[in-house]
Amino acid sequence: MPRQQRSQRQEPRHQEPQHQEPQHQEPQHEQPSSQERQFAVGDRVRAKITNRTGEVTQVVQDGATDTVTVSYDGEPQDDYLTTPAREGAELPRTLVDPA
Image (cartoon, rainbow, N blue to C red):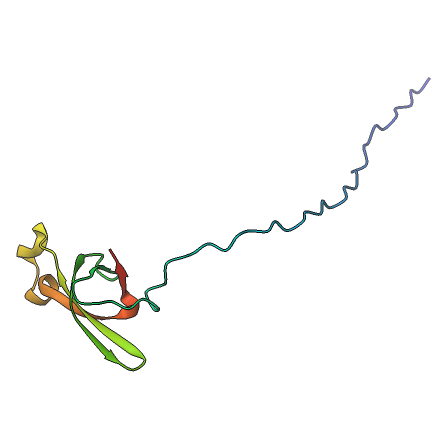
């Protein structure tokens, strides 16, 4: 006698997508980005290109772009760098973050 096997195949159950109400979040007060921030002489900053910290020595505002002159802090590797690389840089405001 041949035996009949029943297939116990389970059909995938359809799940209703769960609807979640959007949660109301209070607006967080963020610090202005470097494009919005105005730097002043004496501010401590970090250059985004070199990741070095220093002090703002001059700010030139020429319309759409501001240029910030940064005097870098002393670092051990300065003995091996060229003078412009260790003394500081003139950077656009977008390439400087507050330290």
